[in-house]
Length: 253
Ligand SMILES: C[S@@+](CC[C@H](N)C(=O)[O-])C[C@H]1O[C@@H](n2cnc3c(N)ncnc32)[C@H](O)[C@@H]1O
Image (cartoon, rainbow, N blue to C red; front, side, top):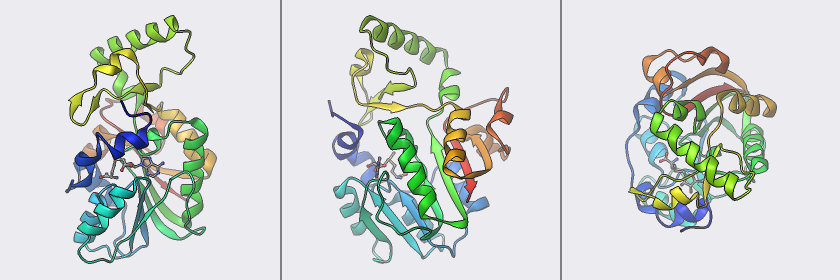
């Protein structure tokens, strides 16, 4: 078992992300509606550059991307045959970019949820705010506790994890969950609550963290709202609506 999420991505999850292409429907819809093609844009946790290469095909030319796994950055550079995307090895919690460098920042595929400590997640969001220019646009997505809680199989699993933690006198929040699949296979070690864990945000909590860093929410919704074109102006307006998949925010600085 990998020790932490960085090791997960450099080993069992590497192949799955290094060679991917295409955009998922929610990404395509968000970018069509909110992304400008002529703005300096950075993607956090780019892996093999999937999103940036797709944006390049769609006419974006001023693109940057970083990842904390050096082998992903090597792969992304190879895949960018134009050689025009600036890729770098960096950790989202401590970036080398100067203040206000970018007009658009992309923190999709739940990168913040992959950071193990609360302090680290807060620092990464503050770093995201720092590198965004005033008036710029930020895209975030989070693992969403409420969407997942809508599934009865998953509620059963949560009950089991709660019991295990109680038996072990563990005070770990139930929002930390083990990986259910790794490298495309069921991760049986999840039944023993083995590390590493990822963090499932409550909607209001994710919104409060973004607001605390200085972001203003423009639109928020799960995959359900993004694909139906019914994103809301605040997380509280999602209460009582059908929730499915990840939680997306479009924010302004
Ligand atoms: C789910 S993959 C998404 C890859 C890519 N964004 C995409 O959508 O195709 C998450 C990526 O984030 C990277 N990552 C996770 N935490 C990071 C951190 N703290 N700093 C930089 N990269 C990170 C991982 O190495 C991995 O490449």
